[in-house]
Image (cartoon, rainbow, N blue to C red; front, side, top):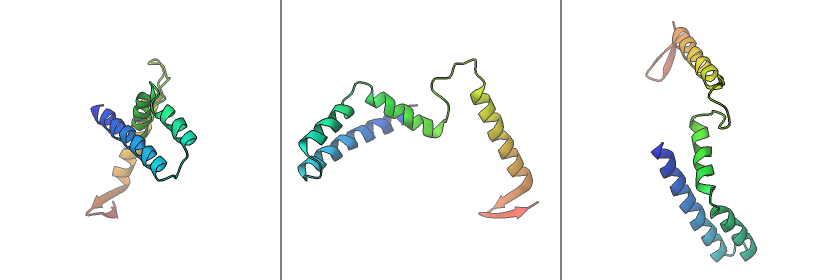
Length: 99
């Protein structure tokens, strides 16, 4: 998941730059800046951001135990939907034709 780490790093740096620019342009005051920078500089901020980004792509509860079948159920549902779509329609050049 190095893509997720890279994206989180870029977003983290961008948020810091945006916050600094907002202070310089007086869009936020010093107390708001300090509050935002405290959050951005938290030890676990990067990890939380990375996990949230991963949840967009892989919507799996992070606190689930390996014994739970939640992901398997999700994968089965997604596979069933995909199979139904393949059976019900054929896509060619962006146009849908019923079989």
